[in-house]
Structures are given as structure tokens and as C-alpha cells.
Amino acid sequence: MDTTRTPTGALAARDASVRLKAALAAGTEADPAAAAALIARCAVEPDFYVRDMLTWALTRLPADVTVPALLAELASANAQARAQALHTLSKIGDARAWPAITRDLLRDGDDEVARAAWRAAVVLVPEGRERALAEELAAQFGRGEREVQRSLSRALAALGEHAEPVLKAALASDDPVVAAHAAATERLLRDPEAAFEPAVDAAKRIAALGGREPEA
Image 1 (cartoon, rainbow, N blue to C red):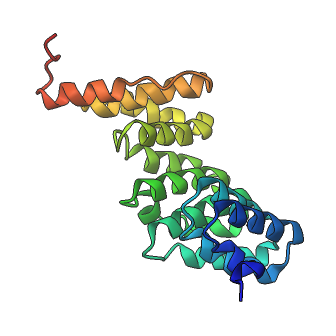
Image 2: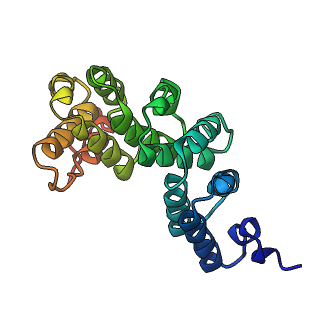
């Protein structure tokens, strides 16, 4: 039997184009019965475009079906399962997901999970909790490589005026890495189209040299 002729089998086909079409079909049909298979595939799908289509398909299904199942994925030992569930929850935008965006997820040891948690948090944060979220995000200034730093800065910039007091404090930090990351974030807050300056990398090199500028 050709398993790719079944919806679940097609989602696991060797050919990425077959998997993409299967996810598209699932979203077009919007059958709630497909939720479990779509979520399971999110955890293992290697192709970015297929993962994106899986998320789109899940947003087409009733939130009462998808949200509880996605929240359950946040406890998975599989980092991709956690990251994709967070990404999908951010696209669905259901307020019921907010309590599940815990400090542990915001500080997840896997950078992709943490980045997804930051994006989800700024979408789902309730009114009045923005400042506390900004403080939690700012505690990770200097984390990771440039793309991770950029993601953190964009999340903080999305909080707008709620991030300003936190940035002001970080700019005055004695840690050159924290101060540089805060400065880059402030530029994005003022101008969302601004390029993300590599100042954090330079600050890390200076800090490693005990505060001395590297010799030419």
C-alpha cells in the first residue's frame, strides 16, 4: 500500500514537495481531525517551508482543538517540538497560551526555543504585564550569536515604550556586552528598519581582553 495516498502518510513522505502539498491540503480542508498529525509532524519536519505550511494549516483549525494540544508540546523533550509549538501559538494568538510562556521557556537552553518563546511572549502578553516581560527579556542581553541577539532586540523593540526604562538601565551597565546589546536594541526601537549593529560582538572581544581594545 502506498502510504503517501493517505493524509498522514503524505505528511511523512520522503519528497518535501509531497509533504508541502499535504500540509496545504490539510489547511484548505480545515478538518480538526488532522490536528494531531500536523502537530506531530511539526516536531520532526526538517524543511523550513513545510514547517511554515504546517503552522498555517494549524491556524486554520479551531483554537479549542489546537491550543491545548500545542500547549502540551511545550513540555516535550524535543526542542523542535517546543519551538514549533511556540511559533504556532504566536500565530494563533489565543490568550489562553500566555500562562504557558514560562521563565523556563524564555530562558530555554536551546536558542531556537528561546527565540520562539520571545516572539510568542510579545504577541500574547496581557495588558499591564509588558514591563515585567521587558525586564525578563533584558536579563538575557548578550546571549548567543548575532541572530539570537537580533531576535531578542526585536522582541524588546516590539514592546515599545514599555521597554524604554529597561533599556535605560541596561545602557548604564558596567558590562560592555549588556550595554552594547541595549544600545543596538534602542536603535531598533527608534527605527525598526535600522540595521542591527554588530556592536555586541565587538564588546565581547573587548571584555575578553579585560576591557582593552584589540590591537590592529
